[in-house]
Amino acid sequence: MHNDTYMPTLESERLVLRRITKDDVDDMFAYACDPNVSRFTTWDSHRTLEDTLKYINVVLTKYENNEPTDWGIVDKQYGKFIGTVGFVYVNSNHSRAEIGYALSKKYWEQGIMTEAVREIIRYGFQELALNRIEARAEVPNIGSWRVMEKVNMKFEGILRQHLFAKGAFHDLKLYSILADDYKALFAPSST
Image 1 (cartoon, rainbow, N blue to C red):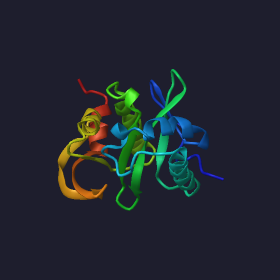
Image 2 (cartoon, one colour):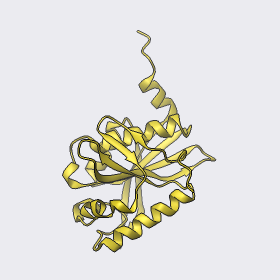
Image 3 (cartoon, one colour):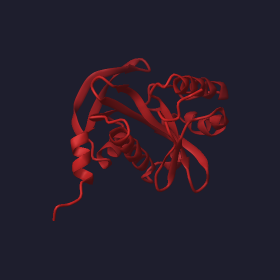
Image 4 (cartoon, rainbow, N blue to C red):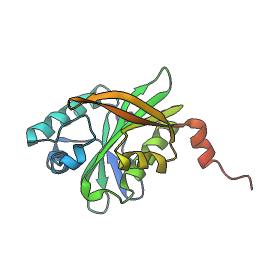
């Protein structure tokens, strides 16, 4: 059986971040088939429910093996599955992780992903005792790197032709937040 302590259900003001299940296939397909959502991802738009189910099965295997992967993002108000957020990798030796995310276009520009990423950062520093959390986005993916800026990640530079996806090399903007940055943001004020 899986270890719930590794990827527990998390909650923020408007969202529940929980393990993805096969029951989420229809809601996930509804946004994963949208070329706007997959435009800057390494994956192609899902063409069939089978594509979505294959992805969910990969995630379920990662849960079973206690490997880093995605949480499902659920809108509390409607109980609807609207996206994913999680760790692309966690490097225990260096206390470092990378965050990745995808969100239904209907929920863009509402601060939803900022709220979800902020909760994952909290979890990474407080529960996993990470020292560094980073995220990367293709240079033209303004929405993604705006999320990174809103959660107080610092821009570190451009990784030139760092990613090969969909037949081309892509430059990526690299952002990070350190445990010390996080503590400084949430430390009680001395004034």
